[in-house]
View 1 (cartoon, rainbow, N blue to C red):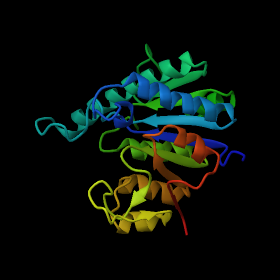
View 2 (tube, rainbow, N blue to C red; view 1 turned 90 degrees about the vertical axis):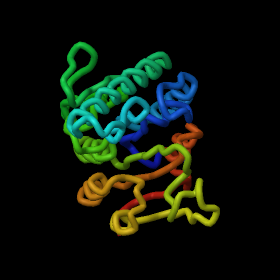
View 3 (cartoon, one colour; view 1 turned 180 degrees about the vertical axis):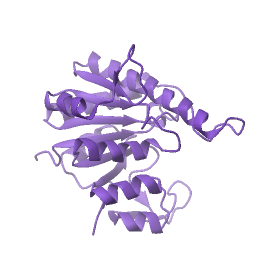
View 4 (cartoon, rainbow, N blue to C red; view 1 turned 90 degrees about the horizontal axis):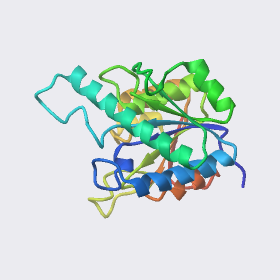
Length: 237
């Protein structure tokens, strides 16, 4: 079975790096995720990663901080996660670059679209930290934006606690029904919440497919990269 995609954005939540604890970092979990990323990379897929920061800070974590400041704190959390992923990937022999939307030259490159594309063309994995660099936008929206900018074929959206998109929370309702395929309008109209509406609209406007799968088993990343029919695919009609 050959690769299903030539170039992909892998979107990882901060929680996915915490090993189910919801906060902090779990070295074993990160190592296993990075081993799967390495295997997909060695198959020849161009990879960029957008990582969230919810294992350190979420925009709604405090009511005593204005939203822009809170979002900036979350962006810094994503940079910690990006550097941690870089360390594990490089320990596995994968050439990696971190680019940040907030300039911090001592620890990472600034985000430059053409440079990111060139890194991928040279076989490097690029990790995008600090979200979009702007408050009020989620890292899901960053994934959609970067996917459009680097001309990715797909966003591989790795989720914890689920293996796709359901009509309601499968962890709370035994009769939850899993969708194999949806379109963007259905995501918005049904309020399924797998991505925020800004990210979904951006994917729709730029015709970027989103494949939602469970990252609790990191080998699922290899399976979706090889075109196995798991998870839920979101595309246009």
